[in-house]
Amino acid sequence: MTQPVFFIGPRGCGKTTVGQALAREQNWDFVDTDHWLQERAQMNVAAIVEKEGWEGFRARETQALQSVAAPSTVVATGGGMVLADVNRHFMREAGRVIYLRAPVSVLAARLEAFPEEGQRPALTGKPLGEEIRDVLAEREALYSETAHYIIDAAQPLERIIADVLAVLSTPASSGLRLYS
Image (cartoon, rainbow, N blue to C red; front, side):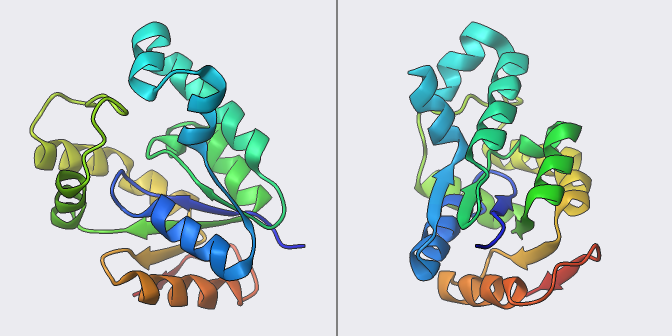
């Protein structure tokens, strides 16, 4: 059995797409923490935030993370999963953490091409590109601090998967490695 693999990064970086592809490739389980917690809450993220506030959503997010982490499981986390210190430590200790990094322009183009209306409320109320830039400025250090590996998520899916498989075939270490 292998440790869980956690994908972290902002909305639009490809955590779910890459995670599903990796799970298929390796015949592992796949879980998206946002989908998992929405199924259990019987509400979408916007409704949870409206009813319980971001603090309530973040508490549910931590519960989801700890509930789904299992051997031979690929976990796509919500973009804000790294905001809680407990989540950052849990992922680093429980498995391998891969930050899928992409430029703001790539993230904005992906989110505009595949909008998820009603699923995730705006974090700042600013135009999409500006919001992404601001959120990344706030979270970049947390993504980097949490990750065992950083992979260029602006590449084609096949290249990203090849890079992920390469990092997973190396021994885990506390050092950060960048693959692109």
